[in-house]
Length: 538
Ligand code: ADP
Ligand code: MG
Image 1: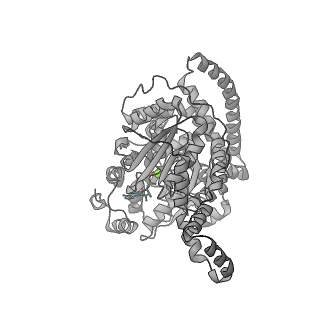
Image 2: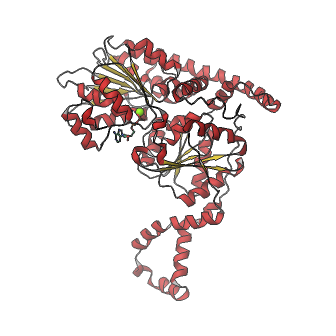
Image 3: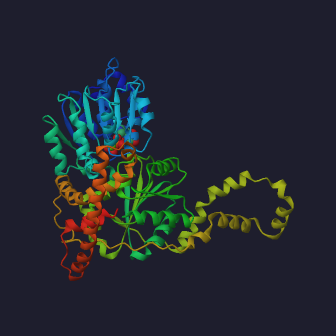
């Protein structure tokens, strides 16, 4: 549908055109008119479907430039998402001269305070840092007209519920509240009931996803062959920009190091990195300085990087919904993508569960031979060779050049140059990837495949939420730079959270032993617990 049919004013429509959007996405089409009318809205749609503009455009529409108060507050789970959202709003609000500011943890608070003095009409922030500012009275939100809880499921997973409640309590009761989320676990519905007024629930079914644009493959091979299999496929497919998903932080570290050792431009992204490191890695990826980003689900969630051509699931996710999120990293905004999932024979039930959810069959891909990989790598070197040839100054080395040209044919020299640039030696660098505990046998295979995506997603998520809490603590600890600087009550809460995590960890060890036992008995520990044990290692 055209944006012009949604009730937006000409100013905003012009900004949309400048921004390059032609048609509204389904979530935009369905929520924008409701939001413009002042209703509270719960919007559920997959990542990458344009939720930012869905809430951003009506907000921009309603901004009163004469009013010096913060009129819209957007709460966002991570620094990266907050920045991304603020950037999008800045672009869309540029012509209208709307001032958008962003605050997040792990960055100098004094500078943020300085920036806030410009009296932004829109503020985007992460929960912890927003509360810091609210407590310091450097952010006043008592005149907020619209409050947005963005990526709400992720915020709950990260343990931000209390912070969010505290923030909400500082906003006026007659505000408009918008909540956007990729999934709708019961905890989010409860927020809807508690903090929203008669919200309209808009859900875009997963089948409207863009996965049609992604060619989905799987490769079946033994666990210990995964790394070699993957790098050979890299050499054949020559991904321009790829994300590799690993199940745990250790995995991500090892994969990133292993890939570097084999000569790829790769780096890892996970929750244990400092914010600074995370930003650096992301910036390198966005500028194509590295073209392979290795990440955990949590770290990559919601990130909008343009032109990701390939997604590689080094580990198949335990939760089929995660697969959909991962694949959503490519095939964005009409571009085509490729995904390859590596599965060991005992994980085939997980593959089927994914296919049940996406209602698409993945195509089996033959592992590439070493020969294919060598040829691929040499072909990929052509671009680099062109650069070298164009940059070289023959005169400087005339006599050596003459010697070689009298000795070898140009064909031989060209082939040698290609092989050298391709650095085929590196292809064989031995890389050890530590074995992770295999996924538990999936009970009942693809059973329970009621295909009503939303409800089912909710239930599944609930299983993961136990782990999410712990994971949240970990993330928060890494975010914790800011709270530690600022001391006070929240610091206690956070450190309390972390030790809570530790307690669960020892719990996990115990469970681990037990579940192995059960596994050998083939009894199967309760699914929820298993999911928990795997997730918490992330
Ligand atoms: P979500 O929050 O649902 O994950 P985003 O708001 O981050 O998705 O949008 C994903 C990408 O799609 C962004 O690059 C955004 O600029 C782009 N986008 C959003 N709306 C449109 C549209 N109507 N047409 C084309 N691209 C769009
Ligand atoms: Mg979003």
